[in-house]
Image 1 (tube, one colour):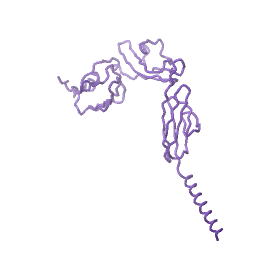
Image 2 (cartoon, helix red, strand yellow):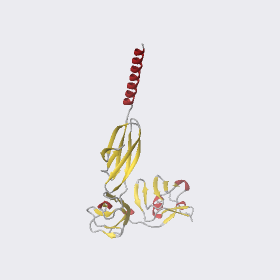
Image 3 (cartoon, one colour):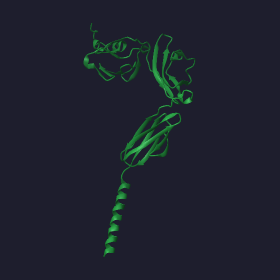
Image 4 (tube, one colour):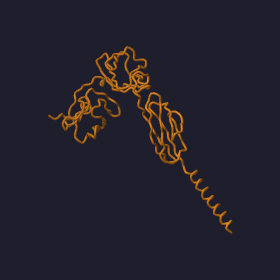
Length: 261
């Protein structure tokens, strides 16, 4: 009798254990899709090498997983990614270059698109003889200036990342080429309910137009298109100032109010 009871108990335990393992096996798993800037970085998940970015790792149990990213010339990154059953977690990682000016890792390339053939192009004040091919630049911030034969001028600030090619696309109309650095108080051109300032972000909605700008940034989004001004939005005292040309463009229709004096 004792032998039969022991056997029954062991069988019950085995069935429960098997059911538990089956339940765990049937539990839906999740995955991680890892992208990096720059790409082609080596990726480890929970200490196991899984390949180079971009990479998809599936059938992972739910919970936190450790992702390690390495690439020659770049600092090692370690992040934790939460995996949910039946879902793919997206993880986009930007790497930081190791400071070493003597190495090629501290350089990248620049390509300019949309410039007219007769335009004069300069980077950081240095005129370029040929912009048809990629140009090698040191990693870090730069400024490109494009001047047309008719006196138009467009500037763009950009950043070069090591071992990466940065492309700048110029999108402008003839009226956008010449810029003025003059800024004017917004409340003298627009009603107070037409604009808002949250932190550094400025949003203007007026006469069907939408403008998104940021304090200190010369590039604004006007109805979805990027336009660069030489004058950056700023606050003086308690007043918000925007580029005068932008305000005049917004209020150039038949309903344009007279500036307050």
